[in-house]
Amino acid sequence: MSYSGIGGQAVMEGVMMRNGRDYATAVRLPDKSIHVEKRQTRFDGTVINKIPLARGVFSFVYSLYLGLSTLMYSASFFEEEEAKPKNEKSEGLQMAGILTLSFVMAMALFMALPFYASRIFSLWTDSPQLLALLEGIIRILVFLAYIWFIGRTEDIRRVFMYHGAEHKCINCIEHGLPLTVENVRKSSRQHKRCGTSFLFVVLLISVFVFMFIRSDSRLIQLLLRLVLVPAIAAISYEFIRLAGKSENACVNLLSKPGLALQNMTTREPDDDMIEVGMAAVEAVFDWRDFQAREKGDGECHDEGCQG
Image (cartoon, rainbow, N blue to C red; front, side, top):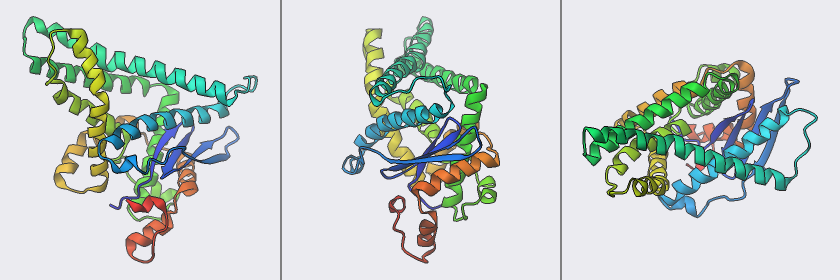
């Protein structure tokens, strides 16, 4: 499998594809037409992307920002007509508020809850390593329950279908097939560079990292866990980056849990959704040039081929 360097994300009734600094959001409008908006990121990350570990923290934070902004953009097409128009400043404040609230809720649900729940077992064991292991198991179970729960709502179910369309489009290109609805439909909806795999790797690595935290204060133990999140994200990013480019048997084996989890966060898309994903790809990526380069029939001039 070739490495195209293109990445994406599902949004409300649409798909966002990113290639270098360019990213495009394609949305299926209520009138069934496809609206495509192409933009450039403010930060190209050229320097920091060359620094191992640091690039993982940058990518994690900026992906959250870009993902939320494109999600809000796609959702704006389905707001009530009576809604008052928002200026750039109010949108920025709203995004900051949502990011802050999301961070607090995530830390409470995936950090504080598993940590304190695992301390119940201190009645039977005082082993820090065993407690950290139990905490990790509880954290993974909470994460799986959360994904299952939100996936049962109609809106998120459709987002997961668009997520599947995004993966299928990228897999279609990277396996050397022309980007058509028929070829995309038969492509896999699993991809090793997926954010779902990244999050699962974060959960697994955190189990081992948290085993080395030593403190008699539970508050300090919890705070140290929060402080270590960027470092864990950086390590996880390097693994996902490697997995996306490698067909090593060991790397493939370690990637399997994340790929299996994608069965929960992706669904089979319909042809209309596939067309939206294709429109997003076409806006930012010359897949014909990429495939010609991979076959040795020509040179690739697209930034995404430089992986």
